[in-house]
Length: 289
Length: 168
Image (tube, rainbow over all chains, first blue to last red):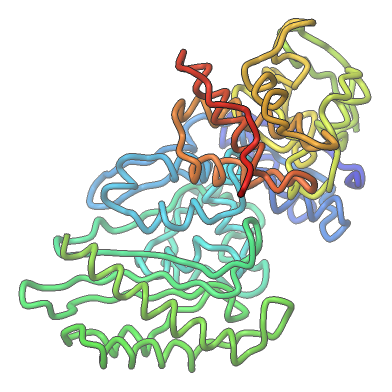
């Protein structure tokens, strides 16, 4: 399969890329890792007239802590997240997610920015960023703006990134002491989208009381879903079998999965409950270690 | 809708005009005439088209040829000089790491990066490492053994026995 014809430019500065976007508007698509876009172009699900390849723009791939935030450049590859010592030691939820995304070759190309900007609730980073209360840095000709993750996803393939803007970074608040996080998805085989996935971040005080909870769900709602009732059920409480079960129950009730080859609705709700329970336990273990 | 690009393939630079929509795997197979890189699923699932792009294993069916402009490509043809074998190729030969051979070039190119990143992988690490490569013949056991054999050889250690295991 070969994509339909298109124009292609590979600018070497962000300004040039933004100029091209300004000129071509919604006829243009940004090409980052390309492992969602190119398959869609081969299948004619997407037929952009103009591709703006941002892979030759320096300075868009980094992982660093700065001014109270973990900052991840949009062009950072999944493989870089997977193998980063900083990520592995302080933000293991990204290691959990990255190593379950597709396969090693795809992770050498796929980027965290593309994973978010694609606006697909089946992707894994959206739920993670919901659990971590991230903000998304978006750059346009007028400069940079940041959007909280809860205001980022509008609908299927639709996000807060305007047609003349580029998603340039993810900002995650550096968690306080006593914080742990974890992600897991159930997948039928390597490379499949999640049947269901759960991302959890918990902060526990010295008495073991949950002072903060973030829970995001993958592929069980038209948009990436925050399990708000589950978060509230944990806050101010100690983690017991009962509080964990209550939070898991709320998540399975509040999601809106659709039936497909990966399972029917009842099965997916049950899997959400189990994944949320297990990720609460794993996040708590990591918070205490 | 075409442009001139320069790619270095197995050490040899090639400058050629390509359509923007040409896929990297077609550039390699049809413009540069290196047909060792295979097209299996054409949907970035099977890994038969795996090559090294600037040293990283990638699926060339899901990359545009124009994206490779200015980059180094290594294909299975570049693994060893004619008449010689890379330790991985030798490992696949010694351990019967292939039946039909269709997946083999992709398996080899993926394994090159796998062993560069991790010269002494466990069996589990090998299985995760080749999780993006499908083989429909072998059941993977002999592929895993082949990679273990090559890893021992490349570390300068004694290679494991290639005698088949019989269950009594």
